[in-house]
Image 1 (cartoon, rainbow, N blue to C red):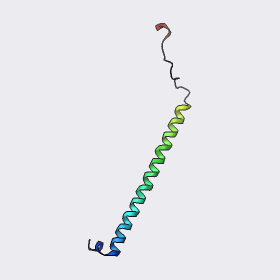
Image 2 (image 1 turned 30 degrees about the vertical axis):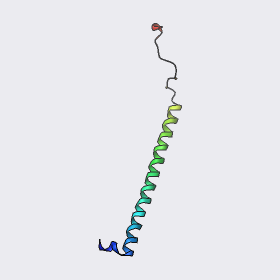
Image 3 (image 1 turned 90 degrees about the vertical axis):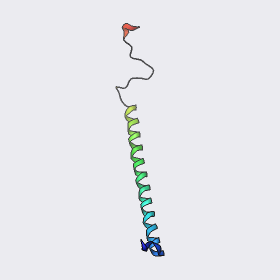
Length: 65
């Protein structure tokens, strides 16, 4: 702890903190990119699903007209 009170120790300490902040920022950007990609793939999958019912139409049996 005494090493933090000299200028060299302070610079080393804050340099380490800055490095960790940059690493966390890069990790957050990577995770955001991954989730954005998953969301895009999900939307693409929904748009090309041949078994998806059309919106606006209800599946009503003919005998209940």
